[in-house]
Length: 287
Image: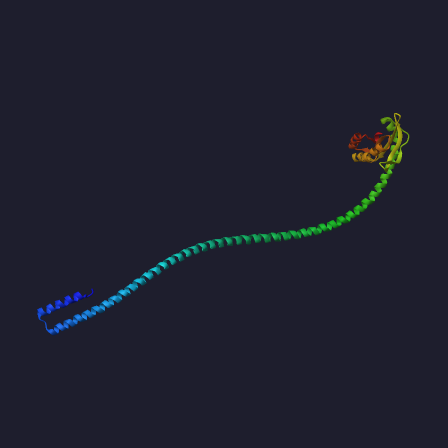
């Protein structure tokens, strides 16, 4: 509690009254006054110290406030750091999971690579076997080509022999046709012809050799007989004779043309096509 002037005066009066009442000595009074003065000085110093203490307390209060502000900021920063730490932990967990998946994928890739290498080894072995087979096939092909060349040479030789034989048989069959066909033409078609021969005739602006050619009459009308002699007569033979000889001869010769094919063996399809085209097919065994 501070010693005010009023309190000081009151104390002095009380002391004075007390001194007068008890009739204390002057010296004691002086000593009392000195004590009071000392108390007043001590009080002053106490007040100064209290003022300094108040200032210090104010400074401490301001420092406390600043400290609290800094602590609040620090708490916020710590909360942010904690949140960042949690986010970092989440990211680390995600990275760990991604790493685990990556390792699994790497293991799967390693397994796939192992299977691929195994397949490549198998393919290499198969390729080696294939190359061996190809070498064997190449050798076999070489032997086959050699045999084929020999066969071709033999076929060429055979073709020459068959051509010679065909010519011999053909001319023999033509001789038979020249003897047999006049009677067949008369009996079957009513055509009178004196002679049949091999002949060159000009039709369609070109010279064509025919196996059978003869001039005759049918009911007083002049006719020309043209024919082909083959050992085997097929449908294609009939069609070819019609297109090459009979049709152009019918247009160019200016007379009625009788077309005949003569042979040892006649296919049924050849007979059908001959009827469709207006031709006659005669087998040597049925003439």
